[in-house]
Length: 326
Image (cartoon, rainbow, N blue to C red; front, side, top):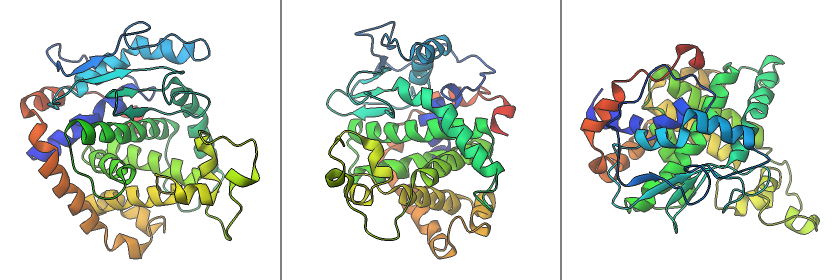
């Protein structure tokens, strides 16, 4: 594996190993640290803000030392500013059901909303049931563990992408949300093949299930539902006008973009996505170029900030129980 392929894997591998009910099989080297990455401890124990509703999620994260270990996984990235990590259910955008991890540029933190961790099992169970009942004909099968891992990893990779753009002053053409998705996809495919496939499938199944492209223009929920609130992000999954106007791409666009980067990176590993008709052949024909553009952008803008010696220390550890990837 060459230098830039190694470094991309390290940026977000913590999300995979620690945040998806996986079982760690090794200890992290004690000397993996980065003074620019801290567990924000203004409230709660360490960076784990006190909670009542999601106390179980909080206790699990504390037991696994998710924030502390994620900071160690990010150690190879030489940030010029401090990145703070913490978890909450009621700070910033972590408010109400459906909240998910986010990066806030003004305060330079990633807030790992407890709500998302609590929602993951139900999301995964729904996808597994749909696969088992053949409601997704021809689509590759995935286990509950793969989907949980993939869902959390993809979301956290996306937010880490925002942090990298901000802290490293990476110029972005187009919408930053699209660029963060592309960063997440690019990093995912540079992990080992089993992990990469878990992330790609988890992300893709999530957005497939969230999307419902209309056959005719509907009325906007902003106007048709007087009880709708602007901060209710979930409405954009079913409301086309909201979805098309949103800063994010539509659910199925995000799914196809992830699949295209994956296929462009390794035809053999993801050929079944094309054979099953999940990734249309016309789109697949241009995926090599899409991947190459992402590859070039990463090497030009992010790689110079990566400490390869620390990358090698992280790579020396076997993080995953193989059964979590099958």
